[in-house]
Image (cartoon, rainbow, N blue to C red; front, side, top):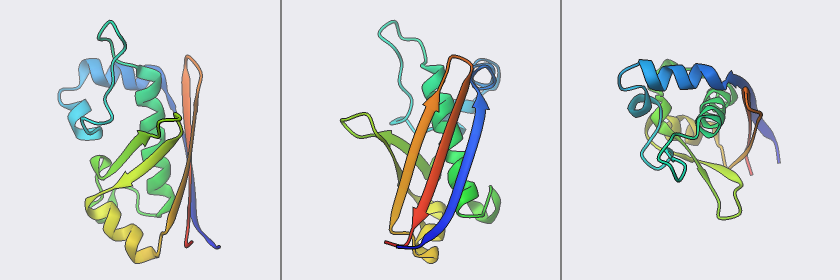
Length: 126
């Protein structure tokens, strides 16, 4: 197994909270409906949104594209296994690029505190 790329990103939870509350259409531009969750009181889980954002950025770094080449945030969908483990589902241009690079496996990890969230992505050819 060979590593094709590695990406890591860290984001302040407050930055995501401010963007959700102040920037029109931020949620729709960055996240799919599958990714947006609320707590039992109907409030956004900002640490979770920040972690998903960090993973998306980390994935862009791992495929060495950033936002260039037509990749969008909503092309990278960060979901959870029943166990809670995060995984990435790719669509659109992100999937095309990953396929062209020979990506077979995507390893993901997310961690957060009250204030910071971090995500790491490792992509391999097997």
